[in-house]
Length: 98
Image 1 (cartoon, rainbow, N blue to C red):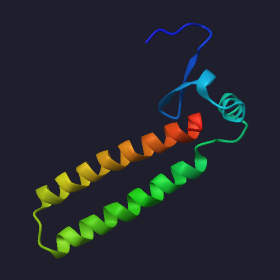
Image 2: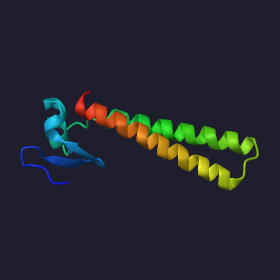
Image 3: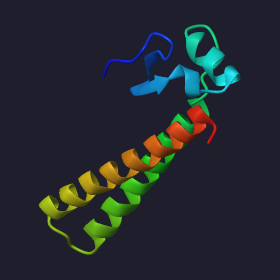
Image 4: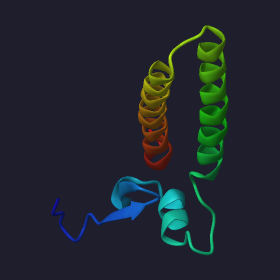
């Protein structure tokens, strides 16, 4: 996707970010990310924790109920897709303060 030079897009932690749409504080944090703060750090930690807990609970419940391995695998894959989409939206909201 080509963009004018006045609206740069930067790949930040797997997300294409339009820097001009970010708040000044978020923009500064992103551009100084190597030695600075990460505006997504808390959200990424929450994502990892929620994903681990939800995956464990789902697998344990399905194993307890005698689900087939293929069904467990399918359910875990669907859960992962759902959580990825959910947290992507939350990251975009955090980046763009909307």
